[in-house]
Image 1 (tube, rainbow, N blue to C red):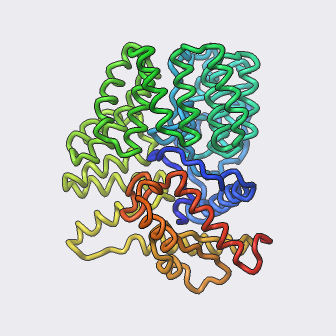
Image 2 (tube, helix red, strand yellow):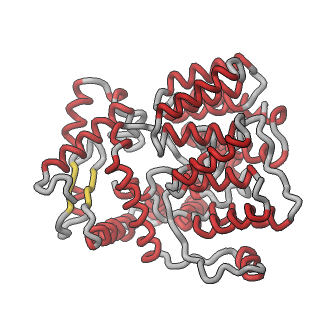
Amino acid sequence: GLNDAIDFSSSQVMLPKRGFFRGWKVYKLARVLILNVTNKLRKAFLGKEKAKPDVEEFLTTDRRKDGDNKQEKFSSQVNGRIPENISSQQSRRSRPEGYPEKGKSADADVSKISELAGEYRSHLRYEEAEKLYKKALKLSPANVSLQLDLAYMYTDMYKFDEAEKIFLKVLRKEPDNLEATAGLVSLYVGDKPEHDKAKEIVKHWQEKFPDKYDTRILVAQYYQGLGRHDKAKDILMEAIKTDPRRFRAYYDLALINFHSGEKDKTLPLLKKALKRLDDNFSGEEKESLRSDCYFLLGRLYNTFNEYEKAEDVLKKIKEECRNSSDYYFILGEAYLGQEKVREAREHFLTAKRINPYKADYYFALKRCYDKQNKGKTYDFLKDNLVSNYRKIAKIVLANDIRLVCVQYPMCSVEPLKNILSGIEGITFVDNEEKFKRVVDRTVYGDYFLDRCGRVFGHATSKGNRLLAESIAETILKEPEGLER
């Protein structure tokens, strides 16, 4: 679906799925093309977004003005790239245990510039954030924390080579820096796939620190990135046995269980993780991780239909999550579950304002309008998503880019064709019969991790392979094949 092409990763991230298609050069090219298209869409739909007054005031009073460069650049978010391969919140990044909390610079300007850069980053305004991070690094070039913040933001921007350079630079000075190591491993098993390098890094840590808790956490993250979640869970259990007082293994294990559908196992692990926060962290880092835990706990209560508990938990982290669209979405779901339609609608609208490219928010708003209109359907989806789909198609085709529209597995391709009817030159990929046949012959769980789409879900590695094969076969059957 085009909504996934624009926002194929969010705070509601499922476990990473690494199909063979991801390693193809054509896949990387497609990601670049998607980024260019979304930039144009943001210009066309939103115009220039104004920064907060305090941000603008600081920039305009700076001694070295940067000029008029406030144009917003949009990029699909990749979960803030925390060292752990799975993140529970949008645009958040937690540091591994044992790594020092972000220190306060002696130079007040560095601290303020860094904070403003974080604000820009949380609003997906990466160009402005990049300038501020670089400005701060000129004032404090040896600041490892700033270097790593910039590296992780580069992964948000798909500038993987730049991110790799910074991680390697940090590791040349600090060979045992856990955060830089974890970032590099995440890069090599994910967006810049070089599995042999990732394997060597992990092997080095296993040889140098064989019995360390942090080594087991790093190895578990490596297997998560490869999609081997059962292996990751086994290693996390070993980490808990190594040191049951530490936080990270409980949290990562809770997150894996949540996304793999074992929600009954998630709650006790999450409660154990919360109990261990006081013993392992303090200050800003402690509050950040507590926010992550409460966010996951709120989502968990929603799945159990315990909406009042979800509301109570989520309200505790409102300030920390003020820039997270998914926070407002999850809290909106808690309100809607209690029939507090007005409050739900306000939160869904806020989520949409922060990130207007995610389909879930429009579906949620439609449910609110349906309830408020007492059965009279206000076709919010048709007025917004269908219009946007057609605009995307026209922009892509106008730039002589081949457009391939892929329907979800198990679903008819006809609704997608109807949405884009009258627009010539589109290749449609039908995944209905192909997936129905294999699921009928085997079991649903071989191809899908969950039922997020009711008749389909997030794919397993086997499901991703079938999807990639279906896309490739359709493209190759076209007269022009791979020429365009």
